[in-house]
Image (cartoon, rainbow, N blue to C red; front, top):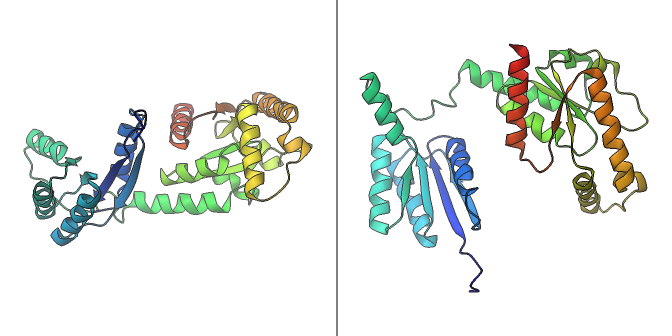
Length: 273
């Protein structure tokens, strides 16, 4: 191994639910390091035997195990097997639950799956996801007024991924593209400006994204779509249009979907209040 080459870190996320809590925590932590890493998620682990099987797999690659389990028997099985195998484990929820129980003087339920149970919030997320799917890329603009958040911008500015992420957070989101030489639909123009966000991006980065998109589709680059000067003009026209409409502009350059979504939600909630 070369001196500059860093070892690959393999992380197992073990959960009695979907594993989203563990995934978010691991990603946030691993961003602090420049070492290469991989992530594997083991969801719906609710039996001691399942926990032991995960540890057996972790032992094969000496993976770090991060878990968000709440049933004491399953936790004990996982930690006991990990100790036998010499596998490092990190308990995300146990210490926090213990501290809350101590503060409230109440025994926790230790019931898995509560975060994603069949609650009103759960069904609201399902409705939001269906809304995002049906209002993607300018579809069904006549019912766009039902959206909480509407994203607009030129092609390949992450409108669809952002809408889907916002939907997972319970926000009804739709998106409408700004196409050169074509007027945007009147339904978009007439929306409450507090709902609409214009997405912009550095022209050089957008050009690279569009070129990669066309290569993946086995399509030869087109002059205007991937020409840096044309892309720059397209972005500037989009910015000017958004400013005229009073829409909040979000620069998505070099930022992850989660980060851009957090900024949009922050602006939206501030405007709404």
